[in-house]
Length: 402
Ligand SMILES: [Zn+2]
Image (tube, rainbow, N blue to C red; front, side):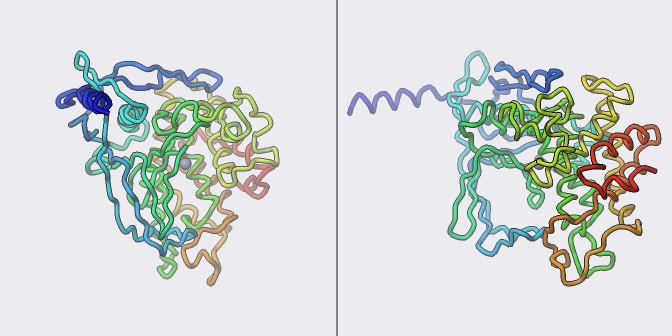
């Protein structure tokens, strides 16, 4: 017993003061090959814009360690309105690392994940400025919270959640969930996944901000597109598109989850195995509104290549990103102006700001996007959209091209 206590005390001595340290061993995405496979290294890197490593507080992101996110007990899961969150109770970050030659060496997997997530997320946030044309100041006043391994409380139920990462538009924060055995690399620090989640933050600031907060009683029904499941699909497709323009992701779920039917349904590029079976022209895509979004990003990708661009050219990808980002805030008003936009009927769930399936705004979204992109991008994109949407989403293929 005495010996065991001594060993515990000795283990404690390994912990080292992290004050002033800004380099760490992290997992870093180096590049992505033509097959969509990411290549990662475990190496020393500087953690950019870091104020304090012990709390992972930086200029762009602020980590919150294992918080409890309490949604109360009256959450309506179908509502698009933000729930009255009762509280966020953070725990200590508990970053365990030793310092050797000025470099933090993580002492457990959780600390490696935290340091890696900070590094990769900060890099994609910095890169987003070029890809969006939106400055860091315009993006957010102050760092964006990152809830690391949160626990969700809903009434009496607690859920620790794992194998995912998310962006929460209601609190404008990220969540990075716990690991599981199905992950070859953790979603929590895979730059391709983090770039996807950041895409949701930009969709929120562009399309969703222009759409407005859902208010069924106000003139023009602001926020009505938030009720439309197909627009949720476009949001997902845009997020995959964002991961493509930001880091060159072609199959963002292949690395964490392996090459299989599930990841293949979300793959972008035609060189990825399983693409032919899951082009969306096949009738068996299982991921519901995500499948619609995948056809959007495949359309944008195919047009990008058809116009002679190299998917490995970051500048060409960024130019496309800026064009799409500039178009997004203009789409809700344009879509409202179309005579064929399906209108919600009074009394339907839409009128109560609830999510409904098959809202059917896909043709209007595609047409508005085409009309608000530079003219030079339209012919190839129209051809690609017709290919990807015409058969599976029959009505979506009609009236899309100018
Ligand atoms: Zn998503």
